Image (cartoon, rainbow, N blue to C red):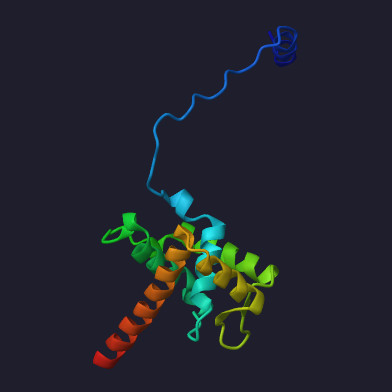
Length: 159
């Protein structure tokens, strides 16, 4: 039987593949694919760039990773170091590109600092005011960014 005959006979017999088995096991933790979703990364970028201190574009992936490590329970105290993940960095660039095209964030040509636009600021504020798990996570991400900056200043003063 050749290729064409196979599909012809399958169509005549109205053969269908069985549906995939239902997932019976519930997974409560976020895996890398869930964690690296563009909407979550975009919200994290907006949260980081809405304050007075603006993250540099070159260190954005690392900062998002460090903030997520401090925010997501599964990564707290972990040795995984998602801030160094190439997948996270690629997706962070894609999220930043989306934010720029949507007019929610800009990158300063001279300083390469990422800033949120007024429209982006209003979106972040609306999410934070909603009192949801996402709003709590964004507030923790903002606080983590402030803590990271403070830790860097202390290290620089000591050195």
